[in-house]
Image (cartoon, rainbow, N blue to C red; front, side, top):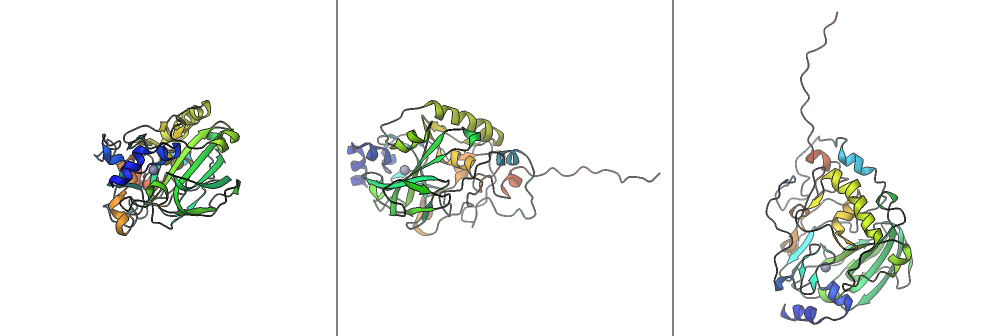
Length: 325
Ligand SMILES: [Zn+2]
């Protein structure tokens, strides 16, 4: 433990500074409290097979904010075939902007067993590489749907991968295409750090800028395209669905909270499940960190039960039967 934190503190390479997965235990108030929030989302007891999906047979999603959200027109998918929530272990919390020895966490640590496939959520271009703190990484660049900013591009970054399924040379990638597998490379190697993929999402105003994005933690610049994206994300997704982080911000300059952005961009998130084995100790459900009025954040906004659970249909008013004559 001490050795890992030490390595993070000493890190001087931008990539190491950014990626440092440990160090949150070094002090500072937690960014995301676990206290109940003002709008409790539907929850089922921990340990169930699919949190939030328990017991609601026969409910049918009603048209409403969730239906309006579908009009975003995004063909994006999720980045893992399973969803085991957020990492939080003795060496760090994986929330976006959680405290780090170098400042704040620039991404989100998605808890998943070593060997789990990581996939592209969108069609674009991808390339792989390896640097000290990130370990083996894959960089994906996709155009954002016009509703969230015509001409804007997302720069997606997966770190600490175990194996790579794309090469170092930039090449086209399809939505759902396998990029590699979850691993423990870079500064996620310590045994106390629960297996996860460090995932970041940055918005850039052009494809060239997105391709040139290095995800360096030293670079906390902003750009007008990112401002535009957050404006549209709020207008088309966050506001109509009452979707919010329970604490913290939705962005850090040009960086978006990956869960907020990805949930708005995709209707296909797998339902949240508690991981088995050692990872269960590091498991934090989305509902601890996010809330939404129009859907269950653990299920994702596209799940058939998500909007029905959050917005149960009111009972039909009784009306007298029509009388002939
Ligand atoms: Zn991380």
